[in-house]
Image: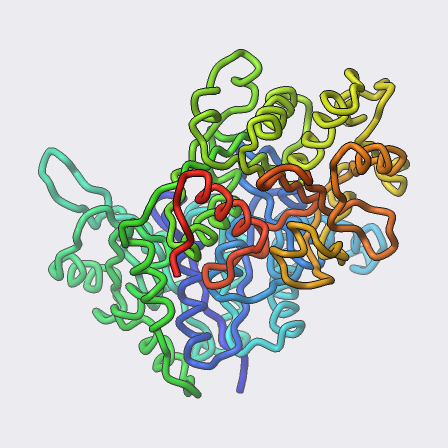
Length: 540
């Protein structure tokens, strides 16, 4: 059977939920027995999001093979429950870099290099790679941005060409748009959707389905109007009202008949009947009234919640598994240095210090680790969060007042966190860290080993600095346990305090492997300890 392609384009406004809709659609097809993969095409010229500000791009999501990708790949992995690779995300920057490198190498024999066919051919080649590498029966592609953006035009042209090359019967275009609500007249308007579809059709693409997003109920008459003006089958106009529960989206699409319609239109034959029981129970559990635990996230980029998308979801997964609801308190670490925001930290049942780069707000994170250690507050440090936990321990327990990471103070007399040996000669910023899946050996009798219930695990990394082993013995004698170590014994992966309910830090990013049905053990450990502090016992 030829590979089937489902393309997701966006209209009217960005951030309309295109990534979640694409991810949910992947689950609809996987639940019918199809092998599915998902790919994100990003129109920006950066080579990858690894060097972009979290304020502009949100979270950088790291895959098993070390690819630094768009946060939408987190949605894909969590919803479809698959492990993606570097072929699942590429940017305009990567496409142009490849074409220019080939031109410099002489591969085009002196020909004039143009957007068509050279850039569009490279885009199509990369789309073909993901199908070839994964062996997927269905490839879902999300095109970043909005129709009409100048940046996305080469991508859309490539998709138009690809449709003709692989056959129209093997492609399906889904256009996700927004229906704005006019308060003065109290009505939803379809005109922006009509204009968006007209822009898409002007480049030779007619959508096969329109997902009409809205904050308000969409009447049948509006769907009829969209179908008529946009030349789309009435069954293929799907109203999608904003849901308070993210994981309800697949159920809403299934109820709207999207899965059956795609199977029918693409000529697919489902091997199994979808079983939505577990997913429905998950959504029911989310909606159910549950005891609340307060979790403070002390970070550098908390003004944009998407900068910690996977952390937020991992907390929710762990809380759900314990019959709890996490009430997240967002705390800007630089505010703590000015004496502000401490009421949120002190009212929390558990604290998470996530990753980050640069010196801004670091002392606030160190002060947070000190508070959690002294007051016995459950604490989970992620990457930088583990490192500040170690810096604080060196300063306040070992008495090295100037202890620091050489990332923030190159001349510190006590570099308890130092640059990894293999990183010291690197000058390029992009894609040069310790990235991707690495093994970790858990030490018996530790909180980490108890949480995982395994001896060897693999976790995703994204860092340049590490714990300085020259201080390892002193730390252990003073009460810190290094409960996770790389198999060669050279890298501290997990650190924890002996005399503490739950103070654990990981050099890796456990949030990237948390799933709705399989919460990450370290997050479960934190939420369980936080629940106990709040006086709640685990729901059986």
